[in-house]
Length: 335
Ligand code: PLP
Image 1 (cartoon, protein in one colour):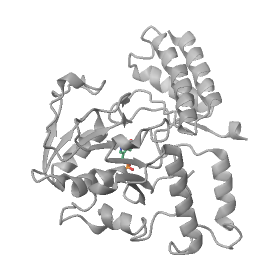
Image 2 (cartoon, protein in one colour; image 1 turned 60 degrees about the vertical axis):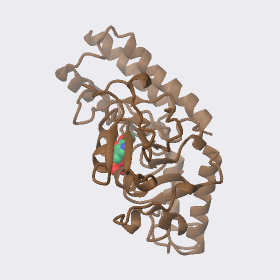
Image 3 (cartoon, protein in one colour; image 1 turned 180 degrees about the vertical axis):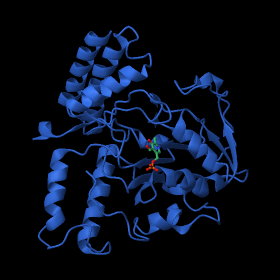
Image 4 (cartoon, rainbow, N blue to C red; image 1 turned 120 degrees about the vertical axis):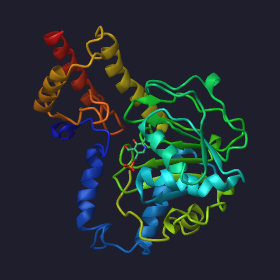
């Protein structure tokens, strides 16, 4: 049945697995025999409490989250966290300084937001374009920074960290919105991890925040209460009405992720530059042809153009193969 659906390679909100959608469809009429859906039930009810607890314990199991970390499901998206992170953490040290690695659109936006609340140090030399992670030997980390921030996978520019930055003991914060749960992560290396759910784990509206307990309580006075981690953690994410819709081992996801991205990257690298050199007319032809085959959302982000393929967890190997086959045919026809 899944094969008959449109193949969605979009960057988010992204494809959801068919079994999740079918279960959600059924549960929209009647959740667990109680006669109403999760969208209609009180967030204080025992049924919703069970859903929330199950989601948290599943996440703890998948990422092996240590007990001294709080897990929260919040509103406000990744963008909300661009503000929440400095509002909650920049006061950890008196200087109110934070180090930012800026490797693309999203970390750049996060750094700009943090400048409202303290001093921001961009740790590497200025970049002309966002194509790779600057060599760690060029970074100048500030040992008195309250935290070091980076975006683990820059969704617009495609720059992904394949290592965890060594911050020499300074608290590490990561935006993992677009590669969350696509591979195992040693949570204990981080002070805070956040991820919008709409790419790999669920639907837009839920943002997962995992934070080490000892970092709570240094929130700036001006922090809106809904963004205050201590308040939200103290209320088990239920200080106000939470986003109530269902969310769905990381090692298997990593293997699949590598297999899928290998299929597309190998083809790009073997295309003698065909899939690297921009050509707007050909791109349009490529997108039209893909759409006729039921493949959508392959257009690059409006700020950079080109073609973009997002291979989040719910995109199957078969769908990736179908795209690779189409790319091979297109190359033969147009090279
Ligand atoms: N961070 C990353 C890495 C993203 O890809 C995005 C959105 O695509 C965001 C943050 C912003 O998320 P939101 O739209 O949920 O605010």
